[in-house]
Length: 278
Image (cartoon, rainbow, N blue to C red; front, side, top):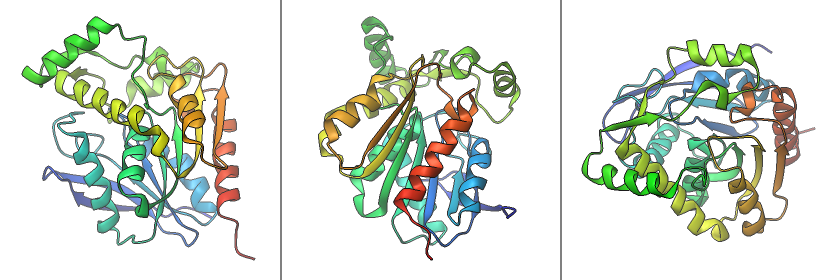
């Protein structure tokens, strides 16, 4: 079955005109939440596989990302992104609880949305999710980021993502570097502060997380803390929650050498959660 993607637009909490792709289905809705600097179109391949199994799929570009308007890759308030998710669902008239598939920052956003609006979420797939602060970032750098983030929020600090961090595959690294919809610039101090605070919220509330989830993580992820999903799996105590670690994988699991196995696991897990009608 060929997926017929439809464009949709929504107005963000901050008033920006934003875009996304949507394909209808009858088996439940999966809302994909991309990472910082990323965009929804990169998840089309997986979205098409879910759609072929009867799921409705939503691939939004968050404000300031991809085709959506707004200062590039700026996150003024992480809570606005939670509100944007609700606006996306309202725009598409999706009233039933949805499944979330969140990558990196999108995984952190999925946690916030599920915890704050549990009635809107059925379950979550965490894909290299940014759930805790990466200990590889030295303490003095984190303290400096907090100071600058409060007083100079739009000051550009450093390039957060480098191609070698994303994938073992040279072809995928080249695609990443040449994608004009990906933000390749430096992170702003205020955005860095918001992301760290969002991670802190997750760390403080893991014991309160009650949704079923699948967490997938590359052991050689140099961008987010690989221990975050493991800690959530250990602390949350959700029956049926699963954790999959890929020993050689880096940050971008869906565009790495292990991507076929990762996609297969996601599809199998969703099949188990939502058995097809006879």
